[in-house]
Image (tube, rainbow, N blue to C red):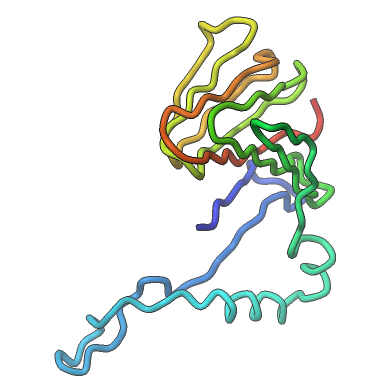
Length: 170
């Protein structure tokens, strides 16, 4: 899966875009003499090699293969953050947990989480539990800066990961 995170149009070129084609495109069927054969497999290695050939140094030095920094680690959950291209107005973060996690907008940062692993979570304000929402896998929501401290509760079995867009400036 490639999860594209974007802002509005910008003269700074602040978005990541990934384009790799031929995934699940039908292949040639000799018996029917048509393109109705087994779905083609995605060739990520070839696609990434093509991207490197176009702007290898710039991509390698600015975007490619970023490693996350762990910004919080507890027995219940972990939060990591990826460095991003300086003109981008947001950073990418992930929260990993089995049962429950906590996070904080610090009253300054809007959060936009997308549930990418797990089935369903509840996101609830700690200061005002009436402020809450539930999201299913692949859904996202907006958490305003005024939400401040909140908890995320796994409403299903197994691990959960939320991928966040977190504004750099609050």
